[in-house]
Length: 508
Ligand SMILES: Cc1cc2nc3c(=O)[nH]c(=O)nc-3n(C[C@H](O)[C@H](O)[C@H](O)COP(=O)(O)OP(=O)(O)OC[C@H]3O[C@@H](n4cnc5c(N)ncnc54)[C@H](O)[C@@H]3O)c2cc1C
Image 1 (cartoon, helix red, strand yellow):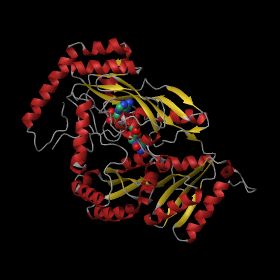
Image 2: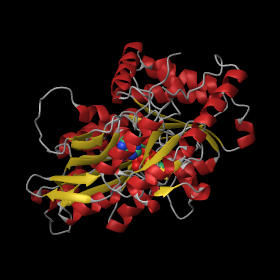
Image 3: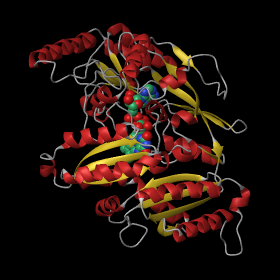
Image 4: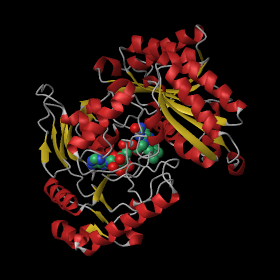
């Protein structure tokens, strides 16, 4: 088993040097034993990349925080080729790092330096195999880009609801491997809930075909659910079958200024009750983030004039013809009802102000603003990002306590969130990168994690563990769960060739 998560306290400098030498020797051994030629024999000359410049994009993550090394980047075209690659790698002691769109935010798709590895890119396995209109399912290959799948469903008047800022470049395989969330989870659930089955290549090279698309299949341990969220550590997902939904015939998209975060919970529940659970997104975008967006992208303006301390992007959608029916003023039933409930909430003092998108163009502008948040925060200065979740009722307490601590310690805070499902992206930030170096980040992190624990929160909501949260995983995940994860990893991948040093931390 390869170990990559060096424990700085435990390992001496000499241990590390010896380890590096051993790994370098393995690189040379694997390369000299004709490994690359064997790969070419499986997938063809042009589908194996070894040139450093060509491989660079696959060896650095989206945040430019993680870089790695690889013997080759290999792009198979079907599960059979993936299977042969896995068997070859196992025989030669070479590790495999699956990669889709490389938009992951936890460094999970980047190989470690000094471990003989290949990047197995799914980018050439991107076909949409089948759309079943009657059964409302779609079978797609792992490398298909999320937005392409959304568009394909849309062409058939159906909805594939998974969506978020990276939709134009992330892949379905990556979505499954990280159990991605996004902004529609409040209505449709995360990737796991959308998936009915997968096809995957296991670490021994066997092909698991679970694409029947059955909605009921109680035949023992669910390998599908084990592979979803496994971040490439238990096998390579090559295709999947997903549920599709009726496409909303009408939508109401609004930007709201709310009285407080507590008020937001009441507003969400009231709108859910009033519209028959039609809320598709309820995204927290408070004033400091709006200011950061406007600074980073001057063409993107807050939809409401003046400061919006507690801003929310609300989207309600309905596929019921009755909701899409227009009255004489040109307003749909859904719009009339949503406005009525917003007025009621204004009278109660929970909603301070609201603007409803009056055209598809305006709706797109609201969403462009929301989807540029991450880039805006990264442009703002130095920052550390928590991807956390909390019970809705505890979000306000977390924000109050954590903001107070963070400000006391000298940080600014830039928080956004898929609030409707309890997910916050909470960033500690500082516009001055030099001053950032002197701020007590570890103290702030310790406070945040302690607070999360006391409020029944999770330290990792939707981006996964990758390599960035291994230390937190070791500290905060229950030992019984960690032991079970390690046992599963050993059972399915006894040689430790699948994405080593990611997701499952070594024992302390
Ligand atoms: C601007 C921006 C916004 C984002 N917003 C969100 C958001 O709202 N919600 C959210 O959940 N995420 C979000 N992300 C994170 C990221 O887009 C998701 O994690 C996405 O699911 C990753 O897909 P990918 O194809 O890029 O995977 P990659 O980055 O290529 O890989 C991610 C992990 O999955 C593994 N993997 C990839 N493909 C396979 C496969 N076929 N089989 C087995 N393992 C595989 C990799 O080894 C790695 O561990 C955002 C990222 C960006 C850049």
